[in-house]
Structure formats: structure tokens, C-alpha cells
Length: 307
Ligand SMILES: Nc1ncnc2c1ncn2[C@@H]1O[C@H](COP(=O)(O)OP(=O)(O)OP(=O)(O)O)[C@@H](O)[C@H]1O
Ligand SMILES: [Mg+2]
Image 1 (cartoon, rainbow, N blue to C red):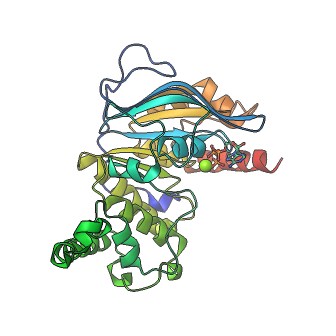
Image 2: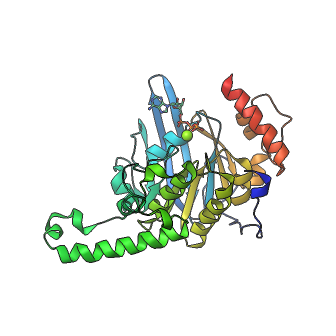
């Protein structure tokens, strides 16, 4: 995030005292929305995810960070039913979700967005939004025979979509094909669409990636707003300044495992995190909220990617 995109309003209100006992990877939460145990996923000989235990705090914003290839997206895919684990169990609001397909997971109130946006290019923005609504009566064979039932529901869905599109400043684009949106607008559309189903947990995979700095502040505000409205947010992000700014809790993955977690300031001063991110570049301080340091860190990360 560029320095001119810094928040102009006061700092967000952080949720604190989320954990129970000593902070360590897998620490229990006072009120966990997700509890996962022994979740593994291998691709051939590669172990992409190997999470012994993790708990995601409810009604808080948790960042899942870690270097490229750490297993963050794969873990998201597993938790949301888009992929199947080799082993493991997890619960969402106390209900076991292992083996539940993605559309059912979404109906239960756990929605996600994708690192590479999945807006349907050849549908209009409004139609993309309508697809996000859950439990549409028109999907039900019996109800489909009773048009007055679903017509009323159609109207309600459309009204809701328009309110959300206004909120995300996409209302003037509602009749445009999603293909005509910029990358950042597609990210906004994906987030707005996720909210159509009144979720309890919103999982965002790199919501800021590719977003024009002019839009980043409004995206940050939208994410903070989700918590204010009582939702829980779990997001993957490489932008450490953004993580420090909005996350209440940070979980660090490296090579498939949870290697550290805690409040943002403590986590970013943790040597294990600096190791995971920067390898041998120990002199870099992830805790500095200073654009130059962040920039230098990103350069190091990029250099590591290329090597
Ligand atoms: N479908 C797949 N087939 C084979 N390997 C995969 C597949 N999906 C992921 N992987 C591998 O699993 C590991 C974890 O990938 P994943 O995409 O989960 O990482 P990530 O933490 O999301 O990384 P990034 O920050 O770059 O998005 C990587 O080594 C990746 O190459
Ligand atoms: Mg990823």
C-alpha cells in the first residue's frame, strides 16, 4: 500500500484478549469460529498443508500470512470444501465440515473469495451478484412451479444486490459485463458478491493484490466494516502494512505448518516469522510501520521469489 493511501481516520479498534493461555502456534481462542485438527494435503511428494491445530477467533480480523507456496491458498481451499484433505477434521461454529462440498459450506455461512478472481466475465455485474444469494427458491423444483414465490424473491435479491453495489461503488456498472471491470473492481465485486449470502465468516485470499491504490482504502474500510457488522474475517495478505493496520490476530504459515501466531506487533517481531519470510535477511524489521522498510522487505521477498 502506498503511503498516500494511509487511513485518514483514526486507527481501527482492535479486538484484544482473543486467546487463552500462553501464545504459541495452535493456541486456544476464547471464542473460536473454526477449529482445525491434523489437516494435511499432499500433492505427489509435496506436503502443501500440515496443520496440527489451529483456531480462528470469532468476530475478529485474522490475517494468514507466509511466504509464497506456504500453503495458505490450499488451506483456504480445504476449509471451504474446494479441495479435499489427505487427513484432518475441522469445525465451523461447532459443526464438522470435513467432506462438505463448497456450495453447502457457503450456505452454512462461510464464504470465500479467490486469489485469482472468479467473477464470471460474460455475466453482468448484477447477475454476478445474484449468483451470490443463497437458498434461491427458483432452484427448488416445487417452488419453480410457483412463479409468484420466486419473483418476489428475485426482487428482494436484486434490491439487496443494488444496495451492496452502491456500497462498493459499483452501482453504475451493474449492467456492464464483469469482463469490463478493472482488476481492483473485480476484487470489489467478488467481495460484494460474497456478502450476498449474509455470511458469518468471510475468507479473503489476497484481497489487495492488483488493486489500484485509489481503491485500497475503501477495500480496507469494507473489511473493517465486516467486523463492525458482527462478521468474522480471515484473510491472506502479503502487504504487511495492511496486516498490521487491520488485523487483530496474525497466523503465520511456512511449508504447510503454522509456525507462529499472535497480535500483529508481537508476531512481526518474532524471529520465526522473520526467518520464514526473509530467510537469512535477519536485519530487516517486519514490525516497522514505515513505507521504506516495507518496500525494502518486499524487494527482498521478490528477489527470493525470482531465485
Ligand atoms: N493443484 C496443485 N497441484 C500441485 N501442487 C500444488 C497444487 N496447489 C498447490 N500446490 C503446491 O502447494 C504448495 C502450496 O501452494 P499454495 O498455493 O497453497 O501457497 P500459498 O501460500 O497460497 O502461496 P502464494 O502466497 O504464492 O499464493 C506450493 O508448493 C504449490 O506449488
Ligand atoms: Mg495463495
